[in-house]
Length: 485
Ligand code: URP
Ligand code: ZN
Ligand code: ZN
Image (tube, rainbow, N blue to C red; front, side, top):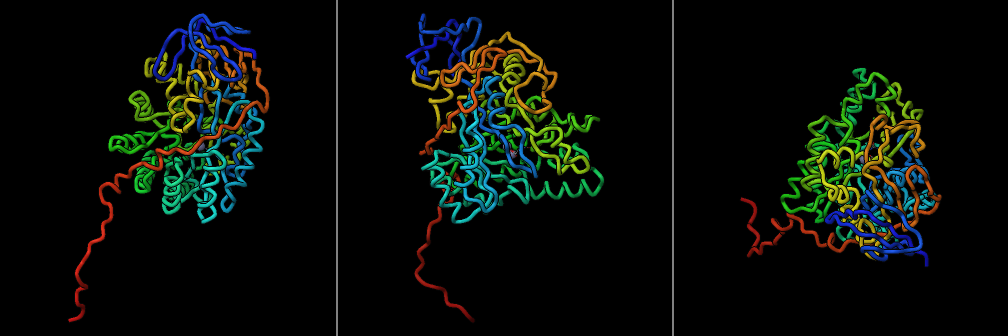
């Protein structure tokens, strides 16, 4: 059996930094230690060797707003690998009325092209006895332990509180974790109508229709519903202080609530929507929208203090042509931005090199924390003997200026265009295979494998603060009071 040794690097994990070589065999880490030898050698002199990134929030080829996200599983995962991300978790979205198992087959087919490992979250877009029953097969037979709920996108993906409460209770029974897009969809829909009626048709109105309060309210509501259902909850694309505050408060009260800021919200702000170039602004239309600097500071503080756990991308990339569907009506601009390729370099540049987060925190928020949350640790997210050899040899001196002209993504623009990043992969390994060597891509379509995720026993046992405080107790009474005069 042939082996590869990564030599002369400094290993950086979520909790340790130390000099050691790594020997990789049969796709896994075989040995970690000094002076290792093997059949081939990768020189990591001057580099940090870290677990490959895991992006738990992508929408490759997502059917949305009358079109499909143009980034596909081949190009999206190739872009991911070039930036040091070795696993993505995409969202399988049943159409209302569609079987969860049928939707999963569709996503299985699309993902066959993936160049890196992947998994799926299953979305709950409607509710019935069939959905209730199929949730068990999704968890127990299909290896999916997370269910997504959209509190926004009224008339398409949105579910109401009743449906969420049913689904969350089912998650608690099955050992699954609910994920939530938290924005009050009713308020957004009314705000959109009002803005349009007042003649505010441009992309900047997208931001006006989705203020931070709307996200904060929904985040708090999702947390209360999860608490009543007795399960933890994971809030995706946390973009503002109001949502962060709800998460922080719940965690302080002992609830298991996770928050996921995106690299876009951490580094790009609302002024992007005021750009006089319509295309520039529309290309950045996503939900929730970019916020101001105070909200960004709140997110950075959350990452440093641990109240927010994961940095993702919500990669949902449409071409400029697709964005132009909304030229006269901002509500028709397909919502979504890209970031898979740039998440790790951008976070390193704006987070680690500035001292906002440490290298170990970088590993935690790009890989290890989500591997634990998704119950795939230490197979993924770790540098340990026996773990999958999904590794990135990170050169902190390599630099580039981000440009759509040179990116792997097939989209015709990049929301980080012109930003210079310092800190890039020298090598990226996916299950022991060198898939990236500096600018040279060595990926193979179909190399990616589905990663099954077992149910989480701890989820089923999660305590609800509500049940603890007010467990119903029947009062025995001696008789029924007489009625009448
Ligand atoms: O605007 C966004 N975020 N598009 C993708 C779908 C979602 O809400 O995550
Ligand atoms: Zn969302
Ligand atoms: Zn999303």
